[in-house]
Image (tube, rainbow, N blue to C red; front, side):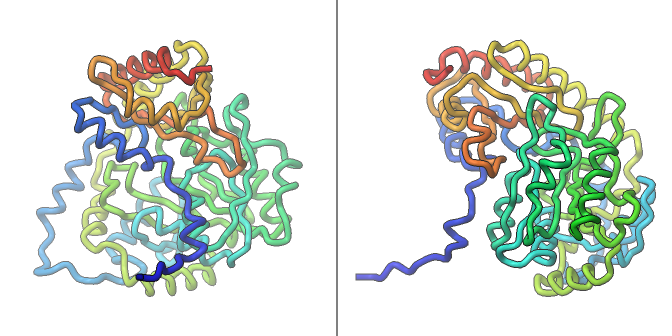
Length: 401
């Protein structure tokens, strides 16, 4: 009899992604002839700028070699120029290129925290933070942000009550995935004050920096005074210029000791994608009009989805301020079960919807059970069809409450 080899505790602790867990049901639904509107994942349908794609034709090496662990000089200079265009002065030594924003988060958590150490996260939060933390034995400590306050931060005392002897950092995503919240200057300054008082890092996920609506502006954590050695920004090209599969992200930090440790982690994985950096080096060739048009398109999509969801009896939500997600509460017994029902048992004229149940975006047991995240990343005609299918599905779902 073959023996069953035991897997690690880490393998048991890794959470399944609520964004991708239902993918097999979507595959089966499509095989059955249904049109599935994929609103579960932040995969934009926006075109990649021609200035980026054209660089595929300019690659002249006879092979695709390893590059420097920190990133290629050409791409690092491009990043420096990009941040300067955002009003942020950073040195080349303050930049480190990663294989997507995911590796940036994994490297940062691994460098600032030991197994058993804690990171404060504001729930609901990007679900993969839990996965990265589980890989490293780091404990995410949740601070709940209430939906009826637009998922903005609770008061100082509630945040500070979660800081303990093993807390190493506060993690923030603004504009936020999954809620679309854009945090105010006052909220950022509050967190900076707590970090200085309790000797913590502030890890700021700024992947959606440009995506703000209704005249709101994003403030980078890199502008916080007195935080030069404490602020770590994780970033990515993925959503900015619609190149999710390029897998190019980066870290920005002015703490030289920390960046030296990040370099050692980067050397262990050799280098970030060479060809991806070659394409990414065209970032500053993309005209400003590209981003202006993209933001206007997403703002229109947001309004369409918000208005459609608001018209469905029993659905609760706040209008998102940025990114391209909305978290909504549904009149259902279990959003995960409802999402699976929409794929397995329901269609409206041959069409249905795939969403990301929100319970996986919370660390507090029981929270988010009636919520789902919707990514408004499809064109407006498809979003209109998706909202109609969703409304009809809610009418007949047997677990409606």
